[in-house]
Amino acid sequence: MKKLRVDIVTIFPEMVEPYLSGSILGRGQKTKRLDLRAHDLRRWTHDAHKTVDDKPFGGGPGMVMKIAPFHKALVSLKLRTKDGAKTAAAKKARVIVTSAKGKPFTQQEAKRLSKYNRLVFLCGRYEGMDERIIQHLADEELSIGPYVLTGGELPALVMTDAVARLIPGVLGKAESLTAESHTDEGVLEYPQYTRPESYPLKGKKKGWNAPEILLSGNHKKIEEWRQTQSRHA
Image 1 (tube, one colour):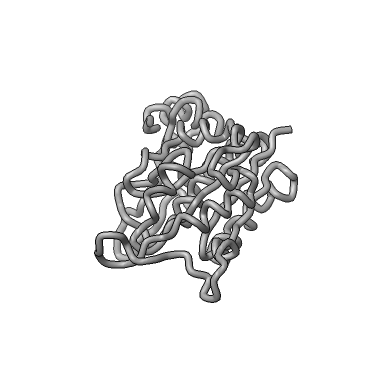
Image 2 (cartoon, helix red, strand yellow):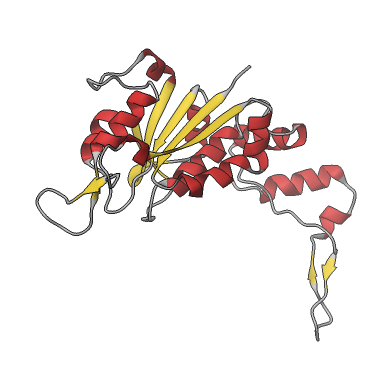
């Protein structure tokens, strides 16, 4: 049975945990298809203030996240040794840093990552992280879009959600069939409508109507309409 473990290393685990335990992700954990964990990066600091950042070399605004806590986190998670080498467990895992300058995350990237047994997201904050984290600890750098966010937690959750849906048994039967067809064909989905057939607008004779073809009962024509309306990735 395929099972995916995801570790999200962050200074704000309380932001991450509710999403991991809800809806489809929560259900996937109950059925033992998913093992999703949020880790407080400050656990791997050893000073009284639990410091995870410092001033950048060469000057400049803001603070930069230090390499030591992230390295110690990966040692604790048994993916790196103290001398920086990868462990045997790391061969079936992927350590990911999220940033706007990373490789674009797409559905195809989600499919690729779903082949691994374990994903670890290292979440940055402040002005970013020491480049050595990306160079020596991460396997890859991924982006959910060409914009800057306050931290890496939201991208990590987006990617976790997209990958988790592809693990067999996580989605229900109906959801799974829909997801598989969209994934295999690269379809980004056709427009959907539900009741009422016509949404009335005050002061107007004509409301906002659902397409007549969807109300026709002609399943062949409906399928043809959906195919023409679908957008492809």
